[in-house]
Length: 147
Image (tube, rainbow, N blue to C red):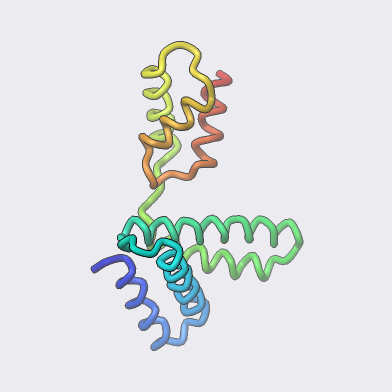
């Protein structure tokens, strides 16, 4: 079963059980997938495409939680956290900090003496693949290069 089919199945199940937050979140995700399809006409929508769209939605939720928390709108931040939890069920687990550090160290040893931030960041992101948060890699690369 593809990820998209799983999303549609879970939406039907949520509708049967009247789980309103889950219904709205899954509908929004399917809407974003439809927009992706429209923007990328002719391209087959694969599980990787679905994961890419889901990651974008997760990123939006993180940004919204931060903004609502700063603005003192805790009830809206909590709603975003619930949506975030639902969306993260469709993503593979992210890499640990230790795994990312290992990748960064191997990239630095491959690049040789005194590589610049851009070189390390680019190579580390390629090696880490799609299951890693770019912000986390950014912070860890800066820490490593400043040691």
